[in-house]
Amino acid sequence: MLFNSLDYLLFLPAVALLFHAVPARLRLPVVLLASFLFYASYGVGHLLALAAVAAIALMAGRWLLRPEAGLRHLAFWGGTIAILGLMYLLKYHDPVAEALPPLPVAGFDAPAGFSFYAFTAIALLADRYRQPAETRASAGTDLLFLAWFPKILAGPIERVQPFADQTARAPRLDPRLLASAGQLILWGLVKKVVVADNLAPFVDRTYAIPDYAVPMDLILATYFFAFQIYCDFSGYTDIARGSSRLFGVDLSENFRRSYFATSIGEFWSRRWHVSLSDWFRDYVYYPFVNESQSMLRMYAGLMLVFLVSGLWHAGLGYGFGWGFLAWGALNGLYLWAERGVRPWRRRLKRRWKGSWKGRGHAVLAGVVVFHLVLVSWVFFRAGDIADALVVLERIGAYLPRLPGLVGNYPFGAEHAFLVALIAGLLLVETLQEIPAARTRLVAAPRAIRWAGWYAAIFALILLGRWQSEAFVYMQF
Figure 1 (cartoon, rainbow, N blue to C red):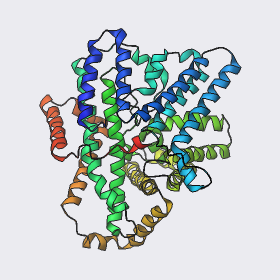
Figure 2: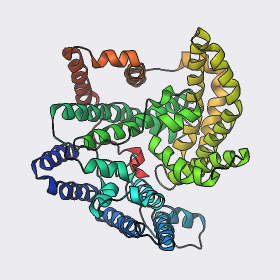
Figure 3: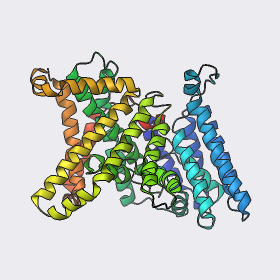
């Protein structure tokens, strides 16, 4: 039951209406049952995997509320290792076994969104281990925290206490709630079915034959993929947030107009997949650095985070490959270099603050950051290092002849359409990024605001590729 399917567009309002119609004491059972039905639509095996993770997390989580230090230590590490072991078995064992023939292939398929709810379960155990008095919740709330249907496939990766606090309230289905939820869902669908899914065919057919693809096609496909994956994943998050808001639960924003970042650190920590970045910061980076003032340890911690992130992506998506680890390592190197030049950049920012030089510096930094990310996306999309290097080598070889390539390339209606979609996206996000413009949009006459949403609806009807593509990140 994909978010971009008719099934979901019927399922969501039905569950929301039932939720608000029943007495408060029945609301938790209603959304639990809805979450199980939603996830079971992907297959009974998927539901069994969720049940296994939930059983481990609930059992260990109850023990973590007890006072005995030794028992709590055992519960945390036992539960975490069991969840990671299940992740290895379902997601990594068969690719490893294929690479190492003596190991038997088990034939497991990792369930949709498994890594997301596995990391959510580990977050529950870690937070309860550190602060047992501040993370108490009923077993039903813990289970809903793991299985909540808007976020189970691709996050955001939430924290248990804010989630539990929100589910304890009794929200009312008022017009303002409906409007804000509907706007998020509608904009998320536009990003997914209009932008991402129209870009996907061009990207897929070009990256399928990197050795033989026209160099200009490789350049265009690389740019198009950057916007495809952004609209696919941020579109999912918008739909998830809007769906969850119908039930009075606000999920993390997770994406904040990512390609407006002016530094790699800003891109990863405040704009792209923020909940996963926060997870790695809190449960990998901080424990590793452990309040150390050592510069070497800090740099090692940054690289460790991105290598683990690359490993987290490997195994599914576009297939297991070293390309995901190369993607992680490359972003780690970007952060190393950025930390090295940070003092120099800070001095320039102070000196040029409020001047045209300062604005020019911000624009140039944004362009550089976007293209650094673009290069790393090649490894992510290709999945295999050899294919990624072919793409980069062929693009690099033809860059000196780019004006001639552009002049001789047979641009057609498809290219114009795809570029127009990206231009429309950037226009909307530019307006959202500028505080004054955002304020004016909110205060605009109702006719203008409704015209924008009618335009989005017509775009979905006329340009949308419905249910043609699964969300990229639900495969992880």
